[in-house]
Length: 173
Image (cartoon, rainbow, N blue to C red; front, side, top):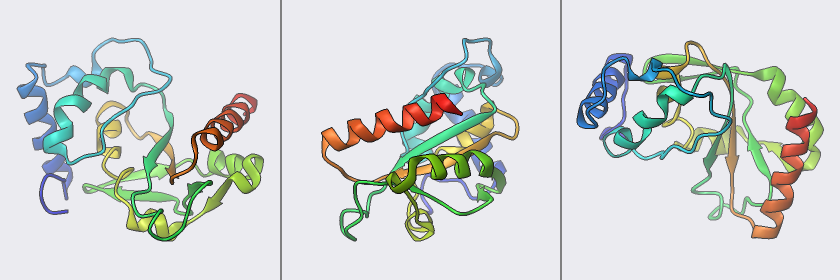
């Protein structure tokens, strides 16, 4: 998408600084003192729309490892549902910056989740919902590790069961 997303680190810095200024926040706000967040919800829209919301979460993004969830927009059209979708890349390049995938955590999740999680490089390469979040994470955490997980459509009871299973797996790691 050539409107509202960054292609280089300098592009993202412009979007970040514009969002901070629009919200009346100082340039170093991402490194303000705050309680570490266990989870954060960020909008995955383009930086012009999402930036003014995303900048408020930056001080809370202090953990070095993250599971980044994104919606799989096209999964319904291609008949993919009811499983979490992992990727198979070691790193992602977004806005001119390399973000390292926590391959050890991903392997542990895949092993312990069994059939509840599958690898789908095709779906990840076609999607943008996680890609849009990484520069915000990188603005707050130097060299964050992450595991990208796409979530396709599923019935609420299945989603709740899958979330409980994932929570149990994460608690055991």
